[in-house]
Image (cartoon, rainbow over all chains, first blue to last red; front, side):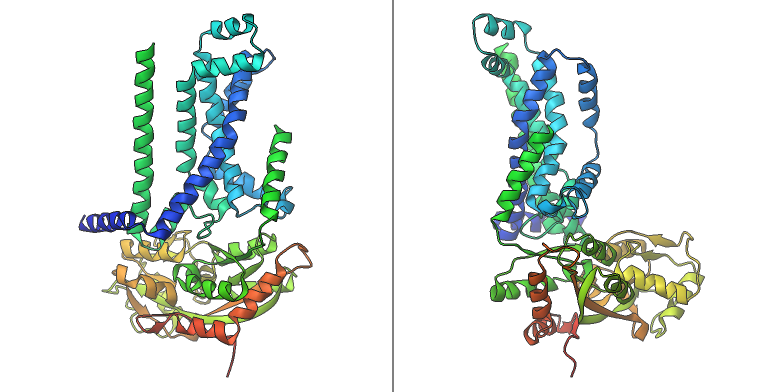
Length: 233
Length: 266
């Protein structure tokens, strides 16, 4: 017990003293996951919208597929991407294995189904008349779509935050296709795994605290905007 | 979807091309966990300007990465596997860099009675006969290969419950052995770094069969023409130079050297 206290105390000291090694790891985590979520969101929302308003066969099947992809293990995505990006694989010439880019691509795969499934549910909750009204008033379809997005902005934001929470806390993809290279692809989760293996629990706990704080802030923010939405309704 | 993905990949590819090519070094957890490379690589970078990306895995996986062309150079410790790697044409210019040795560590009260045993095989037999818990790396690393070869010499069939395969790096296995009050074999470097955090004690050492030589091998550029062969050879040249060897020699913990440089013989 006292070991845990001492380690946590050291962890707080590391964080507050602005230890450059520690913070560079935090920055890598955020920059990779932010890139992934920003690149994925537009496409995922388009797909979610198309599934809601499109009229083609197999829509329900596709929605079911996306829902089941929500629980794909990260190591499976990692393995899949490793094989694709390895020199022996089809995209080997791009030399992307063990780069931040590979981590971004992997995390995009991870959050894509989350954004589609949750985005689909959010858009489904919108009043169908929003779209019809916008169309009859002569708005082009892309503008009508943005109107629908605006109507369900809280739901979509919740989807994006959930996706972000998922990818910043994943370890399987980052470890496998990032390779845990110091100062380059070592992010919060892979660093925790490494520091634990070295018996450096303080640094692991410090990084864990950063993730916990983030999770807490995201949750508070989510319940805040949800409360606001109820108020508006 | 596919077009967009290819588009993204192409975009990233262009972004990557504009940067200078770093050297990718696959190495073992023992060299990374000991902190040796964090000390050596900044010196190398200052002299040559090369960025080095270190991937620390087990020796088996490191060689596999080299074979697949996913890294440019490897720093490993499994002489037999290294020779096969070079003979099969996967790597070129194998150079001996440094060495240390393996040690037996275990609980302080030493129920198997291996303290001071000079014969590694006998030490293992004592542990096995008493069915004392032994934690194995179980990850196809250099240390694991060494351990298996010793078990083979001891003529012992493994698979009983006292023999625990962890499938983890050296630091993790030492911690597991510590928690389980078990025996294990560690490279001396990792042991020295971690020992202050553990209850385990060093019990047996000194058998020549426990020597642990490290070598560097460049991945064969004939197999992968676009590999960073020049960078790989620069790193090998520097590590085996007088300067590199001096840095290895000066890397000490509590005035004990963790690795003995071996590239330049008197």
